Structure formats: structure tokens, C-alpha cells
Length: 273
Image (cartoon, rainbow, N blue to C red; front, side, top):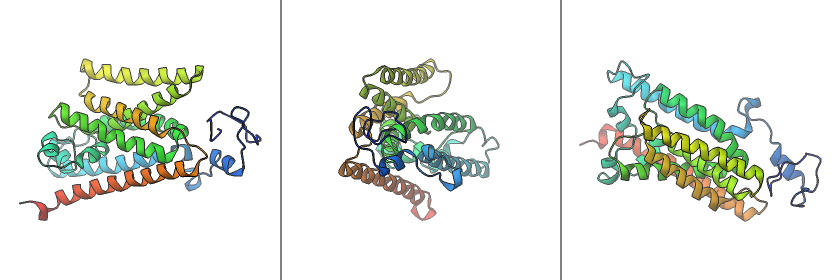
């Protein structure tokens, strides 16, 4: 894939036949990176797999904690108190307790096994597409921003507790819709239509009430991901532009770590009255 116009090219091309930009060894290396951990983690899904590992670890921790608290059905349904302790979205805690870090931590928690498996399934397929289109650094920023905007709208809209990766996932959908809109071709239109349908189907399922879905978080995540993707654009050959998004990625990771640090401080017995 050409690093400038993102068109599909061959590894033998020295000049992109579409945008006519010079392709050096660096560009070819970017298109064909080495496998990670001997191929255990596909490079095209590195951030995606990393997110899934984090989500898996937190779900296992939630399940064990909920079970130790006396919840015999912790595998399928985590109790509300455990979700609160580990940083779920609780509107009163966010607005009145000033625990804004919950807007981040809630995106890494799940309320039960089916909730976790469904989000993991969608994230695995969708994440690879976003990483291919926008690169790892931009994907991290898109996922972070959409998680925050998703739970921010949810906290404003309803007092009901909420957790899940779906706010960030809808942000990735918004990013792919933005990607399709930026390519005014038949393929771009197909991408935009495809992912718009994904988003619409999910929202309709939530509206019809087949499952307890937080549509406010989905809408907020979709908007956040779309806006961030439009601002970020696609990877380019301009070093200063790429450095900006590398720094933004580092800031997103740092803020996520800080949010969980706040969560652990809140959980500490020394912090309780």
C-alpha cells in the first residue's frame, strides 16, 4: 500500500503509479513489516491484539473479584459493586465525585462473558482495518478519544451504570466511515456504506431493546472517532506530521495509565474514610 495515497501497489514499484511519489526502501519496509513475536501477533493487528489482551486481563480480574465477593454467577454477570470499584461509568461519581478517569477505565471493563466475547469478536475484525488505513499511532488516539466521548455523552444522557469496549469500537467505525468519505471513488463509497450499515444496525438493536445496550456511548464514540479520523488523516511522508500523532499516541497511553492509577488509588483502603 502506498504510504502517501494508500493505493494498492506491488513491492517492485519504485514510483507509485497513482500519485507518482517516489518509493524508497523505507516505504517498502512500512508496507511489509517483520512479524512480531515470531508471527504470534500479526503486525496488522498489533494494537488490536494488545487491546484485546488488556480487556481479557481486566475481565479475568473482574470475574475473580466478583466471585470472591460472593457472586456465584460472576462469569456471566459481574455485580455492580465490582464494576464501580474497578472504574465503571457511574454518572454521579463522574459529575459530583469528579472521578473523570472513569471515562477512560470504563472502556476496558465488561459486564459478563457474552458482553466481552461479542466486543472482542468485533474489535478483532474491525481493528485490523483501522490499523491498515490509519496506522497504529492514529488508531490508539482514535480509540482513546472515542472511548472518552462515548462515556461522556453516556454520563450526560443517563445515570445508568455502563462499561464496555463498544464506545471505542464505534469510534473505529466512525474512523472507517471518515476513511471512505475521504476517498471519492467507488471503493471509498463502498467502505463508507459498509461501515455506516454496521453502525446503524448496532444502534437499531439498541433502540429496539433486544439487549441492554448503551446507545448514548455508541453515538458519542461514533462522533468522536469520526471527528478524530477526519482531523488525523492518513499516514503521510511528512516527518513533522507523523511526529504529532506519535506524541498524541504517547499522550493517550499516558492518560490511560494515569486513569487506572487513579482507579487503584480509589480502591486503596487508605483512600477510604
